[in-house]
Image (cartoon, rainbow, N blue to C red; front, side, top):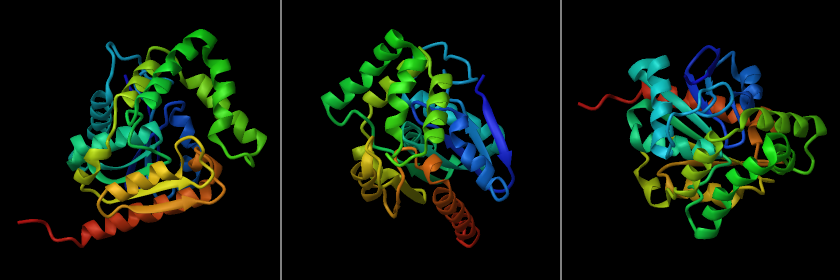
Length: 264
């Protein structure tokens, strides 16, 4: 069973959290966008309230699971898909494997994957051993503060830490880390054929602006926006700006679809 939080009304946006998050990572979007968008936010398989997968999941499996969520809630109409960090990598694969289900793509503080070089992939794979050795609370206490800018208030740091500590566990986190380590979408970006918005906090030191620029430069027609004063968790640290761009992009995309003649 995959746990999906369902908030609001309007065009549907499926939100996919980062590797250390859960559906709770999108609470600023539930409160800020629920009047104009219907938000579906999952706990990925092996996270939060979702069941552990009965076998190791690779990136295709996560993308297919997300496609199943869209079909279950939206049928063949599809949904706009927003992914943060690892969730953006899943969203990218979803757009490549199931383009008919993705009405638009929003990639927040994301990347092409950690398979771009051996050292980056190795560092990603090592995280599962760290979690196993030290437990979720210690793991989160060390990692979560890095996801925010130095100016982030203490209560936001505490909340990000609590979300991570309550969401990550093995084997799910290990499967997610392996899916990142095994992936490099660089050569696939040109095949994405849905409207795409790439958002990145200008103070993100985890994936960083250059990684988002690679996404925006490689996806045809992608729009690239930096959010001032935001770290890696831009949707949480600068929710007003993040929500404004998300809301505008989704509604503009919907209006353009209404006025685009169907292919004969």
